[in-house]
Each structure stands twice: as C-alpha cells, then as structure tokens.
Length: 339
Image (cartoon, rainbow, N blue to C red; front, side, top):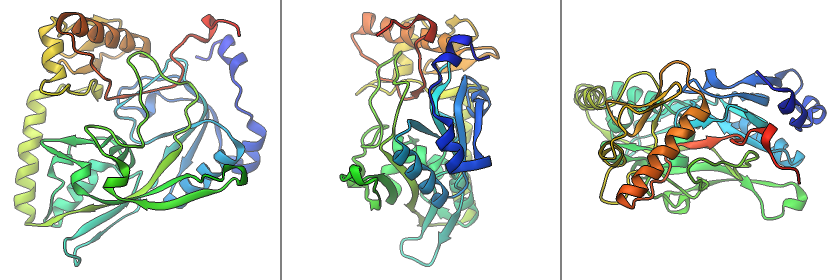
C-alpha cells in the first residue's frame, strides 16, 4: 500500500503523459505480480508496449519529455523495491517472431519482448539447434541481450547476429534518437553483462534510472539438426535444472560466479544455506538462489543479499557482484535526509 509520505514524494508529471498516451496509461500499479519473485511495490505510471515500433515510440516520447523510466520484460533477474518505482515502467510486450530456415546458417529474428525460452522451444520444433541451453530461461530476449544470459556453457554472445538498439543521439538538444544494429562486438559482451547493463553494488540502486539505450529486437544464429536431437538435449538440461535449482518464486542466480569459483559454493561454505530473513530464504537446494517463501519483501531479500555478500567477503575475501538488477528506490522515503 502506498504510504502518505510516498504519495507526497511521487513526482512524475501525469499531464504530459496523458496527452501523449491517453487511455494506455495506468497509475499506481503494483509490480509484484509482474515479477518472477512476486515482490515489488507500485509504479507511478505503467505503459505497455505491444510491438518494437510501439516501444520505439514510447521511449522516444519519454526521452523528449525527459522523464525517468525503466523497461520491464519477463520480471526475472530483477528485484523491485517495496517502495516501488518512481517514474514510468514500460512493460515490454513486443512479441513478433520469425524463423528463416533457408539462410545459411538459419536464424531467428524476434522482438525484444518475446520469452527467450519460448524461442528455443519453437526452434526445437523446427529441428533448429543452438539454443538448447536457453530453453529454461524465463526472461525476455531483450533482457537476455542486456545481461548476456547464459547456461550450460552457452550464452547470448555465441548466438547473436545483431541487435536493433534504440539510443539517444549525441545531439540531444534536438530531441533526436538513433535506431541502429549493433553486433556482438559493439555490445561489448562479458560474463553476464554487456555495454547496456549499468553497474550496481549490493544493496543499492538508483531510484531514477534512464537506460539510455533499449533493445528493440535481435537476430540469433541457429544450426540445422532434427527435432528429436534438439529435444533430447533440452530434456537433458531440464532434468539437470530440476535437480540443482529450487522451484518456486525466485529471481534466478543472485550473484555472478567469481573467476574460478562459484557463488553458490562460497555462500554454502560460509554456512548460509537455508538462512532466512522474514519471508526470504537462501535456498537449501542451491545457495545462489534466494526464494520467496510466500510473504517475502524486497527488504527481506536485500538483507539476505547483504548477509551473504558480507559473510563471503569476511570469510573468503571474495567481493560477490550481483547478477540480478535492483529496480526502484531502496531507501525508505520517510527516512530520507533533507537536502
């Protein structure tokens, strides 16, 4: 529920948004139901983009109005503050997709709001290999490109042909935007990151984030195979996930694996497996997964993040880096210092 203090601090100017988006605009929408972890407070404003062109138009207007916004796709790998998100949340529902099996190699083009795992499963039905590793990834293609999503020794950088990126031009005083294709080299992929992913530290986040660049669509390289061979590999990976990862509401892997080690191993060896704060638990199945037991708050999860980060740093000298994205204001608006 919105507190009186939070209502007083809500600053998003609604009038120009109503003028631009009319009845497509929703106010004070709780975001918990839009996330895999089922955690999160309200957005000042929510907009739904139904195509890449729609997303282009919305982002261009928001940049022209100089309003803060974030893009939310499948809601995985994200923790939204209990106090919500000040500004605009753009829900990415751009889901057009097409396969080109005649090209060599074959490929798939998809808008950034398509579920990434769904792309892999639909490729399998056509006997197209190369994305078996992605079949269990719950987020969208856009999020996968930004975070260089990966599993089972595969990642986006290995499959990407190019991504269509919308970004601000250098001549911002003219309100211009640029829509262009970026290759993997230009995206600067690294382990679970890219040039599009902003840096965070555990337990903090900017309450007013402007992504600066938005993924509109992407093309992915595939390989010819048979439906049975691709499905067999996907089944093998799915069985491994069921054995090693917890079911239920979680954000996915909490921390990036440090070089030469595993975050889950370090957290478990620090004696934290099964630790609980409020309604959040460090999974007893895999210590790099933090689970919502049904009534967890974002503050419960951030307290567990701090516990794991600080304990691992103290015992092993390893500074764990978040893999998830923190979204919103993680400081109680009622406790902010004036000035």
